[in-house]
Length: 199
Image (cartoon, rainbow, N blue to C red):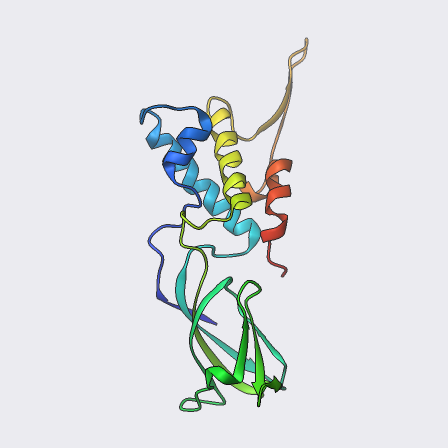
């Protein structure tokens, strides 16, 4: 269970100016449309990757039936761990008694500088994780967002659900079905592979 303490103010993966430059737009005449596409693309990418990319401070609670050697946090990369309580309130774990793998969002338990086990029961971690968007968006993630915004922009004058159309004596059309993230372009999917969290 996660509770957000300090929420992000923006979830856009790319700055609007970067989108303009990538698309060769030299003024702000298309800003309203681009802003909408950018927010949509950022949301679709986050849902596809099953992640919140924006930097936020959260409290995450775990309840284990048995001990384990690693806590796997829902948010990453970890920027800072504020506190960890183990086995109920008041039992604060010293920073010297755990080891953080920032990029993977994992925290290992230590005892006298050796690997140990987190206890069974309730563990509460307060931490900050994510990227300071859009400034710190990884290049591949940024490129995926740019490509998706371009895709939305280029298809804005046609039915967005139209997948193919045949103009013969008898016309035929086929349509996409389902959520936005089910039909991401192949180049975008390739870029996002490294960021998608396993279930």
